[in-house]
Length: 291
Image (tube, rainbow, N blue to C red; front, side):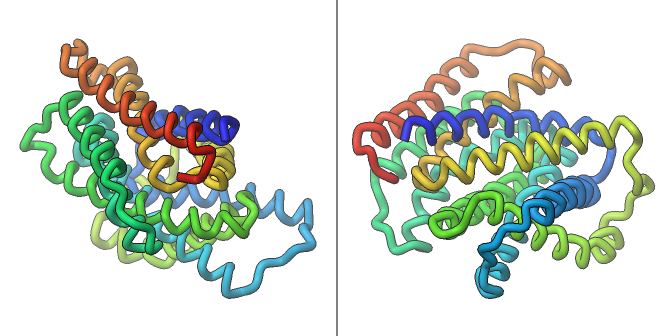
């Protein structure tokens, strides 16, 4: 259990860089995600074909994993859309609602009873993030897109929790990202019609950031999180993800100067978020079960 929590927190820390990289890459959100998936899928299939695993999944399972991957792809497109329409901090702040959505959606989707403690912890985390960043009306579009990204993230986590019990993490990742890549490729002509972009190809610097985003922040980080998800619940994962906005916002402040000074409310908000994660971690270790 402790090993799973360490992997989970390591993955969350690395995910904190995705927002910063998303702003650095000079492509629109659709193209950014498409290239991210392209690189990741090529690498994963190369590994898969090289190792040639003997245990093949039934077609039904592959289709299910591909469908879960489509949900993840939508999350990424909306997440980077929130960054493009607002900024890194706003997009990451919206992820604070993951705990509340998970506490409500996971029981509805899995038949698990709603846990009042989990709902309360999720609400406290939202209050903490709200204190960290005061929303501005000019970011309204980015906030709405960011909330949609969070919903897709929660649904992805719940479905992945069910699938990871019977499927190896790397196999899950392979078919999930392949499914997402195929779906986004089919949608890209219509997407580019709705949101035309003059820049279609990444620059050399964009390509470097895409490599880091695909290999480190996608393949390696997803592998860590999926291994952790074998031992913990989707709620615990999404609650811990409330630290991702904190890491990402700090990086955005340092790199992009999105906020030069940290107010007292930042530290109060951070304390609230950290307390919810700490309480849930204590509950997990104490019960030594997948709560």
